[in-house]
Picture (cartoon, rainbow, N blue to C red):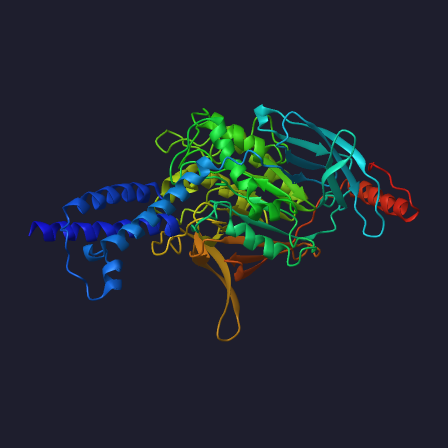
Length: 586
C-alpha cells in the first residue's frame, strides 16, 4: 500500500510539475508558478528513492510518459530535467546576459525644429561626433556638424543630445562619426513634425502599446527575441526600404519587468542590465532605428503596483535612474526632475502622465493619482489645447475606466474616485479628448458619457509582448451609474421630439481579451476641421482584428502665429528651388 502511495505521489507531482512549467513558460511568468515549480520538483524527486526497483510495464508507454508513471522512470526523468533546464534558461537569462557590448542609436522626441538622438557606445571613454543633413533622394547634401557625444560610466555609456534649428516636416539623416568626422555608423533617418502653428489640419498615424518581456511565450535559445517587435516591424515596414507607416510609437509602461518571474537586486546596475537586454534585441532594433519612440513608465519598472506617494521610496531612485538614462532623457523636455510631459504633432496635442511617482495608497484621507503639481499642469495643458488642438490625447499607463475589477480596482484610476471625477468633469468640457492606456494585457474601447457635455473615449491596449489571461475576465460591460442624455425620437406619425434617456456613465464599446501581441494604430485626419476623424486599428498577432472610426466635434483653432510659420515654410521652398540651403529656419 505504501509503495502504491509513493507511486501515486510520484505521478501526481510529476504531472503537476510539468503543468507548472508550462504555465510559467507559456501562459503567465508568475512568481507563484516559479515557487510551485520548486516545491513540486522537490516533492517529485524525493519519491524516486522509494519507488520499487521493478515496476509493472505499462501497455501504453505514451500514456505512461504523459501521466508520469513510474514504469517509464528514465523517460520521465529526462523530460523533468529538460523542463527544469528550460525554466532555468528563462529565469536566469536576464542575469547572465548583461549586454555590456551593446551599441545603439535611436531617435526620441521630435518637434518641428528639433530632434533628440540617444546613443550607447560600448567603446568606453571615447567621444563621438553627431553628423546630420537634410535628406533628398535626388541630391545628396554634405554632412553638418552636430553636438559631441560624451559617454560616462555613470550614464551606462549612453549619451542623449538634441539637434536644433531644423526645418518643419522635413526628412533628415544622421550618422555617428569620430572626432575627425569619419562616419562610423549610419546613416539613420527621421522626419521632423509639421509646424503646430499652421491650422490647416493634419493627416498622420502613430502606434501605442505597453508591457514587454523578451522571449515570452518562451522558446528555447531565443532569449533576445521579442516577437511583438518583430510583428510590429513587419507591419510598419512592409519592405526593407519603405517609409514607416506611422510617425512615432508610444510605449505606455512596463518596458521592463524587474520583478517577474523573480525580483532583481535593487541597484542601478541591475536595472540598467534589463534595459540593455531589451535594446540589444534585434527585434526591437528593427523598430527603434527607424521610428521615433516616446516612453512613460508603469509599475514593473519598479515593482508590482508601485505607489511613490511623492516620497520616492526604494526602489525609485535606482530604478528611475536607469529609466532616465535609456527612456526619459530621449523624451520631450519636462518640468525639472519630472517624468510627465506634453508635445504636439501639427494640430494634435498629447499629455503623458506620470501615474506612479505621486500616487498615494487608497488608505489616506485624500488619495491622489497625480499629485497637486501634475494635476495643475494637466489642467493648464487642457485649457491651452482646447483652443489650439483638434484632438487631445491623454496618456495614462493605467486604465482611466473603473470597469476593470480584480487588482485594477486598487491599481487603476478606479482607486481614486474623487480625483478621477474632477479630471473627467474637465475632460467632458473639452471636445475630442481621447485617453490612451495599457497595463491590463487586454484591449478595450471605453465610452465616457456626460449629460450635456462632450463624450470622452479611452483605448486601452496591451501587451506588446507578454502574457494574456486565457479564461479569467474582470471587465464589466457598463457602469451601474447612469446619466440622462437628451435624444431625438420620431413618433409613428413623423413628429420629432426630445426625451431624456438614461445611458451608462461608462460603457464598453469593444473588448478583445486574447493575444500575447497587441498594439493599436491611430490615424488622425483633421484636414476637414468641421469633421475631424480618428480611425483606430487594433492589431493582434500581427493582424488587424478590429477597426473603429470616431468622428470628432468641429473645432476652430487659434492661429495667431500661423502667418509667420507659413512665410517661413514658403521661404524654405523658395530657397530650395534656387539651390540655397539655409542651415536654420527663422
